[in-house]
Image 1 (cartoon, helix red, strand yellow):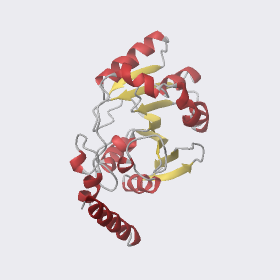
Image 2 (spheres, helix red, strand yellow; image 1 turned 90 degrees about the vertical axis):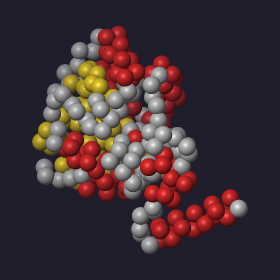
Image 3 (cartoon, helix red, strand yellow; image 1 turned 135 degrees about the horizontal axis):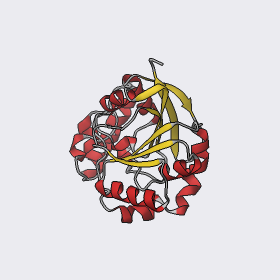
Image 4 (cartoon, one colour; image 1 turned 90 degrees about the horizontal axis):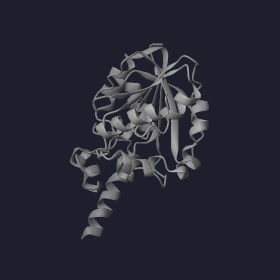
Amino acid sequence: MKTIRNLNLIILVCIALLLNVSIPCWLNSAQAEPTANSDKCPIYPCKQGYHRSFDDAEKWVKKFDDPARDKWQKPNEVINALKIGATDKIADIGAGTGYFSLRIAQAYPTATIYAADSEPSMFEYLKKQTEKKSLRNHAPVKVPADKADLPSMINLVLIVDTYHHIDDRVSYFDALRKQLLPNGRVAIIDFTAESPEGPPPEHRISKMGVQDEMRKAGYTLDQDISLLPYQYFVIFRSAKD
């Protein structure tokens, strides 16, 4: 009986894709793992993000900062591709353990990096790392999950493996656009459907889905960078620039 039900779901998905229509929320949530808010359909084209707890920073350090990650995340190559200016103000939203923000702060000592995260544990960990590494240009910022309330106007926003966690993304990025300096950019890196790394497949958002949502939020695609084996890497600017 379960096999027949799953087959019916697959058939419905295929029909929806062929007809180029949205897959209903109830169909996505029927396939989702039982996580917080999974009943709200946490994948594109629905509004809700994939919710899980990151409340133990020391635990996540072992995963996020695992040297094996460098092979496929290519942090130095990503940072070079961002073309950061010497005095840029950069916000790493969903900074986590500082995998990118700390590297950027060290590579660009005259730039200002805001390491933004909504998890109290991550925020405290970022503060400790900032002090430990004596990085005066690295400023941890605790932000609400539903709004990037940054302390300054920004040249570059970096969002790595975090886009799929954000709720009501069109509204979120529309508000974020108002915090960009002229010619400001938003760089988004997230997992492809085929990636062996990343969230459960039903919680991933396609590159086309990201582009569609960002267009609705008032952005235009600036760059589509082919660099990473498991993730897409796209950069947007405000359509009004």
